[in-house]
Image 1 (cartoon, rainbow, N blue to C red):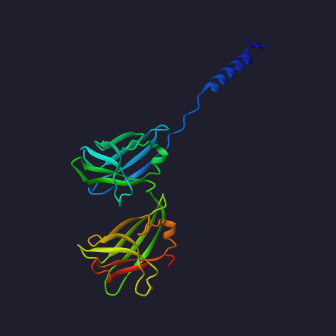
Image 2: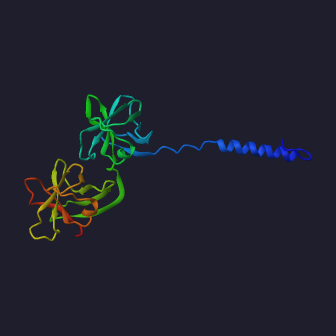
Image 3: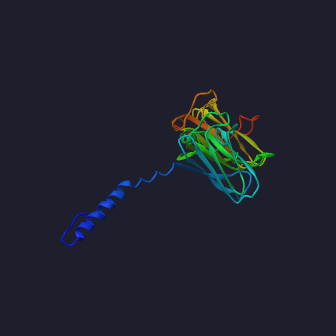
Length: 274
């Protein structure tokens, strides 16, 4: 013991030493696990919303948690599919079914037994579906693009002007995905219910005499909704075309009356460098 005239200084010194020793043994707090959350969008059943969260549980384990609201208490199969939602694709990862609005699955590999970790999953070329039931997989409760297919805030809208007396006009929205591809959303006014209208990108501008050749076939416009959705990865000849490439491409987008009446253009607009 350190002795002093009244003992007070000695007791203070001892207490300080004890506190320093205890503080030196204190463990540092563990870093919070990495997480990425996507918003689930309504597909075939109105009123359903929710999220799916990817959590890096360890270097080899990713916990995928689904939380739905507005649904029922039934058993809903859930899967991660290849490609983007507008393209569709085979099942890549089978998840635990959503029951009472929740599901949690520890994932270490794809269904083909290939190992997959958190970093690979948040760059994955895929989308997630929650299905109505095992007997009705075609009805989608909710879905979302994930990984590299997640949309960024980078986008460009082009005007599609009516041609002649068609009375059809609208816009073509190009949105950049994290993997550099594009989601093209065509929104038209003046289309008729039941119609199916081919949508294509031509080389050249709308001023091209006779029209330029078709370089990319997009998903047709549904006349009932006036909508078309396409993931742009390549041209029809297989040449890759990223969002950045599309923004400087020498082309124009046209909506035709039908596959039998391709000469009849309903609306069109320059894109890219034009």
